[in-house]
Length: 464
View 1 (spheres, helix red, strand yellow):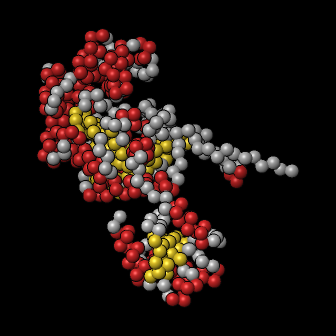
View 2 (cartoon, one colour):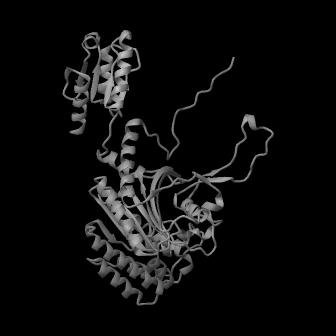
View 3 (cartoon, rainbow, N blue to C red):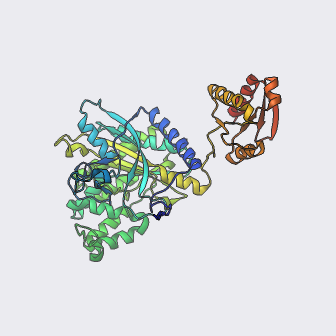
């Protein structure tokens, strides 16, 4: 006698199921974002979720914990050669795959403006707002070094948040060139990515925590490069992070004064942020929606210029919900010396969904149907089938009740699923060539001709 082993139906830590009600809200949010992207002329693109390891890492050590893949031999494959080494990796973002596409298809018109939605995977510790599998919805412009491209990305970020009706967003941006200059000045120019990873934690540990991290040999062991600064060097970092001003112009002037013109790349970074700020003012993007924040660094090492992130002032625990930056030269790993310019940003759809759910602001429906057509009895199945199809041809999402059940149970199903209208075709309705239309919100019912039924449903749905 064989014993069937049962498996506990649970999802992996850091992963999540999207049941229909949540998925309907997810799809609505995605569609709103897509429309904003296309209003700026961005084009759709899709790429595989798995890439060769050298494509994703460039053959270098990588900052993020990633998922790797091996081919596992199945019962039908016994005797075939099996790849023992790492064959592929699940992508940890969509940007590197974009760089591969740009290198693989050199005839793409430039600037190439694309949007892409897809799942990505990172082996991060699961916590509120952080998942191991999550969806990114990216925009990127490839082939432009102009700060107009960076400005447009920030403008799109603002437009998306406005379209989604999120009232407390703030877009903060900085420039990796300024941070590179800081690293040069304090004597760790070759370890700028390590420095940026520490600076990126200032929101969690504060300026004092950053200084302590930079001067602690115990903390330094966590970094492969063992970044350790002297007290004097760390104090300069403190002065840098403590710079403040009521205006972006004033803050950038303070950066220039602190650096004292000692870094050409730093001056270039300041100039670029001045240009972006002026462009945003010219576009009329309100200043209470954006600010220059010298602690913004972004953890990924491929950023080379302006970097951006969007936080929600009423939900700081959710972290950044829309972030990105400039990544000139990312195609160099595929085409040596190509140095193609790029800039973009990615919205964290799952974080936004989680935030809206927590706030009770996630607008959704339990059903996609506008109308439920009931089946009164077996002799009237054909009438219900045919009318349901005519409703669909009129443009209404129509569900036919497909289980044998009493009319009361069918109406109960419509209430549970929050379907706005129910159609009943009983013997009397069939005889008189009418239908009974029940409005589930008002709990009213009337007998109508088919055309009157269509008009009533259409008018009610249009008013919502």
